[in-house]
Length: 221
Image 1 (cartoon, one colour):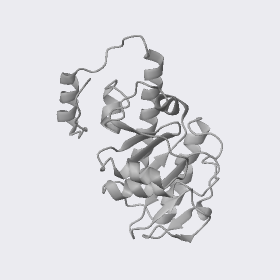
Image 2 (cartoon, one colour):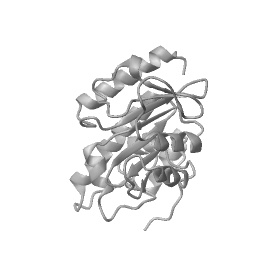
Image 3 (spheres, helix red, strand yellow):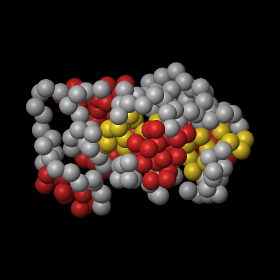
């Protein structure tokens, strides 16, 4: 990422406002972080709306995860930390309370290893597959252990009854992926019970080969 810290602060605010204004995370829900070249990171403050972030008040954490400057950070720091620790390529993490993804996380038939079937090529290209982790209260450090238990295999994760969290090699990539996850969750809910055609194993294999995707392996039911 060539952007300096000032530019990253402004990009967090710009993309956060875009997510908020399009109804993807209401009120003061949701949080964003970006890793910096010195090993520290910027993260949105606690109790802040993504719709009206102030670049100067962003929480600046050191490599040890402790606050260096700015407002107190989101209570979801353990969640972000776990993704950075297990996914070495991750440079940004976005967590939202987007409606359709939350609804999906509450359905009884969801496979924790693949919360969504292969519905569209762009879902696979941007999200890979999505894990579902059990419910923990917001900010519970135990959620970090659940994320670490995934061993860095997944870039997109659903927190049960809570919302999606996605990592990316840039903030823009993470935002695009979490938007794709939300739209795919919406598609799933629209088609639920209608016996839709999903991508076939051959089509998934073609996408994987063509675009160099790495998908978690598991047996289909």
